[in-house]
Image (cartoon, rainbow, N blue to C red; front, side, top):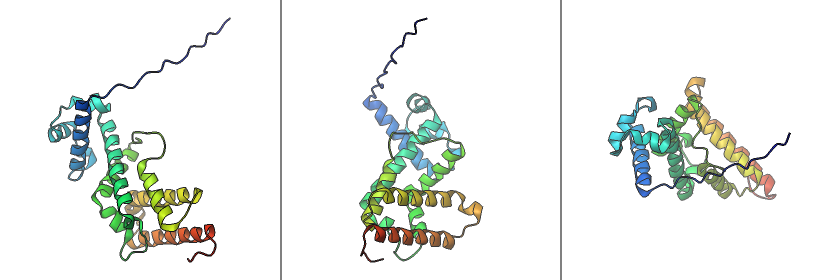
Amino acid sequence: MTVVAHEEEVVAPKRRLPIQIANETKMIDATIELLGVHEVDAITSRMIADASGTATNYISRYFDGRDGLLAAVADELGVRITALVRGDKSIMHFDQPGNHLARITAIPEVSLWFKLYRYLTGRNLPTSGKSGKPPLVKAVEESISYMFGLEGVDVSVCANIFLTYTMGNEAFGEFLGTTDDEAEAALLAMYNVVRLLAVEDRPGAEV
């Protein structure tokens, strides 16, 4: 018996027309505005369509449904936070007076991103799944490298710890009974660990 191997057909991505891009942007922006007022579960397709001046069927046409739109919104919030982190290095400075976690979560884009993150993970839904590291992760890595002079794998490890901790604390801190002071103390402890790693990488550097 002869087995004939068939090459997989490569399907080119559909060309997105300017009107589609404009409508997608309107729906994403409108959903972000709605997130500032409503819980995620309360935001309906009709609300999004009315707020964006589009039709409800556009959500399925452009995003394969409401969850797809929410994943795109999460990506957009990540891009906006990335711009903030890259544009203001003080956001990542752990040694400034006051509660650092409170400062971070007070940023509107961050607060909305966490709100949406809890919803998406609760439904076991990923964000849009673009290849490679998300821009937000890269921006945090850049800031940590800039702050501490770290290079190589330590940068990724520290960024992972920071993001995992802040997301986890925001999502589950109340459930676990973690106070704001305890959360801040844990973050400062991680900050000191990163400083020690920086010294190990650069002998003679001050702690």
